[in-house]
Amino acid sequence: MGDNAGPYSVTKLYRHDCPYESCPRRWSKFSDLVEEQEHLESNISADPIIHRHIYSDRKWMTDSFTVQNAAMRAHLQVALANYQDIDLELDNWTFRPPYQPIVHRWDRLNTLYEDANDESAGKESVEQLMAFLRPILAPSVEALARTKRTGKIVFEDVWQIFPPGELAMTTFYGVEAVCRVTKYERSESFGESPSWVINLEYVDWNGERCGYTDTKVTIRYFKGLRHVVSLPVYPLAINASASQIKARIVERGRKFESLRGYHFQTCIGTQILLQSKGVEGRPVI
Image 1 (tube, helix red, strand yellow):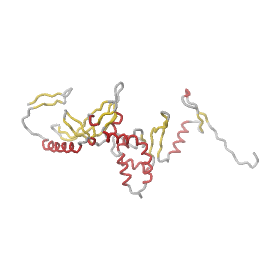
Image 2 (image 1 turned 90 degrees about the vertical axis):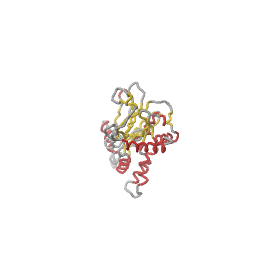
Image 3 (image 1 turned 120 degrees about the vertical axis):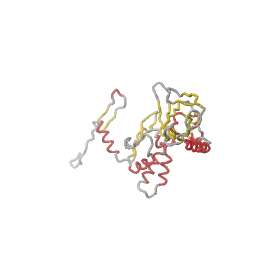
């Protein structure tokens, strides 16, 4: 090089080898992997959405995504308010498949977006969020639409039909009852088939107090498709006779309301003992 040659720089690279050759060797500008990770996090700290991928089954699949934009977070905060077991701050605004809260509140997200003023702050950011979510949620949203259309469901998709707040049909001692879903959870013990546990609340009178009480209904594992209305609990809205059922239950509720309290009458029938080891019925006069 001549005397007038400008300054030059040298780029140093460090080779990182995985222990036990579990992954390919790679070169990095950082000698310390912790420093490299901190540099990465610093570079992406201002990005609106962080979309993480993993390579599985010969293709890149979504592992999780984190929403960092303030307007996007505000949109999600309103749409997901009061959803079961979710704390967006605690979860660092990170969502993982199959994105149950967003699937259940998808209509709410769309309605809030459509109702927002075009001149409102953050409308463009929310539009970008919705555009990002549509292809990711498409499989679950389409599966739910197919279930509503056909009335059939597979076991893995059972969570989709029980959003918190949904009215659901079940039976107590052979008597139909309409309850409200408070929570759903998957239960799976070692050596046992998985099941879905649906937590419900309903209005009851226990002889002393009238108000909401809780119950649980378990949906055992099943293979293939099953009619939704054949499950031990199912959404009322999916029944073709939902309006007639609702009218009948409301009328029964009015009668229940008029009879609650203390009434002294002659009774000949069966007493159901709930305090014993199992449900036990005894004749009573």
